[in-house]
Image 1 (spheres, rainbow, N blue to C red):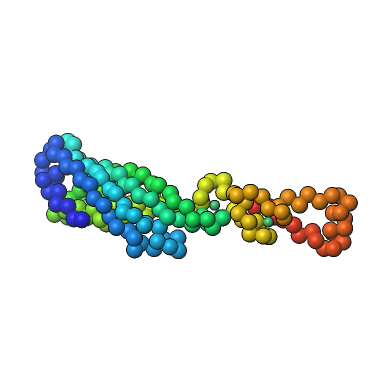
Image 2 (cartoon, rainbow, N blue to C red; image 1 turned 90 degrees about the vertical axis):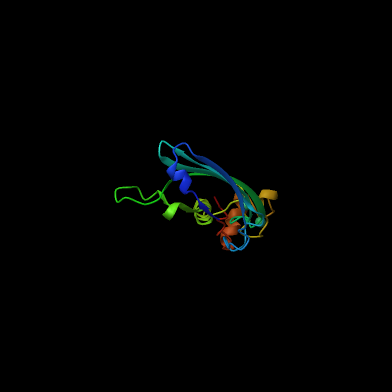
Length: 173
Ligand SMILES: [Zn+2]
Ligand SMILES: [Zn+2]
C-alpha cells in the first residue's frame, strides 16, 4: 500500500491511523512458508512539532520447524517499529530516516523489510529444547530414551573399552 501523506508533512499536529493486513504466504523462509495467516499491521503517523513519526505494530503467527528437535510449532509475534519519515534526505541526516518522495510512503516495502529483518536466523521451539538423541533419534523433549545416560558400571566400562565401545559423546548442549 502506498500512502499519500503529504498532508502530514505540511500540517503540524496532523495525525493519521491506519490498519492493513499483508499476505506473506509466498514468502519463503527457513526452508518453508512460515506465514500461513495474514500479517496484521496497525499504526499511526503523527506530525509533532514538524517531525513526522510513524509507529506501527505487526502481529502474526509463524509456522516453524525447530532446528534442533525438528518438531513443527507455531510462534505468535507482536512487534513494534518506529521511524521518522522525511520527504528528502539532507546529507547530514541519519540514514535511518525513511524517505517518502513527494510525500508518498511505501508502507508495504517498509513493513516487509522491518518484519523480515527482525526474524531470528535460528528457530528453536523453546530456548531449552533438548533436541534429538543422536543415536536413536528420539525427541528428548518428550522423554528420555534408552540409549541416553548410559551409566556404565565401572567394571563393564573396562569391557566396553576392550570392545572399542567408548566413543560415547552423546553430549549435546
Ligand atoms: Zn525443539
Ligand atoms: Zn536415544
